[in-house]
Length: 294
Image 1 (tube, rainbow, N blue to C red):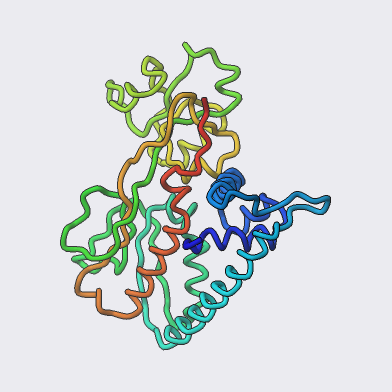
Image 2 (cartoon, rainbow, N blue to C red):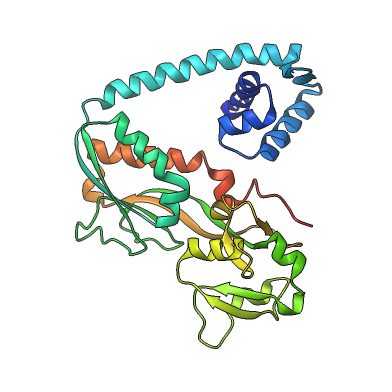
């Protein structure tokens, strides 16, 4: 194996003894762990784990991979210790602007850990849908979801946030299709164009809710169909994707700052930290771990 994530999978299975525990340790779905394990088994032409009465255990092949995994983990930990020692000298204030759903469902815990790791840095977190103006020093670092961010800003352009069509299980089971309704953010007498591409283009537009998270909550409670963000729907157990649909890329996610701040160590460290945190949740954001409903 030449992918650290594959070694992390072996370590997680060894530590957790079940696929579910391994998934919790890695922060992914149970189905994602199962799929990745099947891929490893196929690549090696042999089973990496075996089932026992007390749970999963590594096969002889898995044990060999575990030795390598522990060596790599040791190097990673050593590198993190060095990085932390370098960062202890960092200090000062940083203001960061993040859209509320991304803050709530993706980055809240990460930012709190960053603050604990860097006690000399004071974070001022602005969770708002309003686009903060970096040119007027309204904030230092921003998370943006856009295909056309301001060209003069500097930072990291990542993958696209994926959307999918969802409804509550009970809503789909108990509501006749001719009574389906869409929950949208706005409605001015014309249906949004994206509704025409769904399995229910003729369903009427029902409640209009401006807040993205509340639209998911309304759908989860059985009030209609939504076009939702995969990373948000992941947190609502009653939501399922509509049959015959799959995640679609919406807009790219960015971690940005003004070029005048790019050389400041604490800004660089936070931007890199946020980028790594988002990358670790890529499957959830892009819908790669989304179960297909057929």
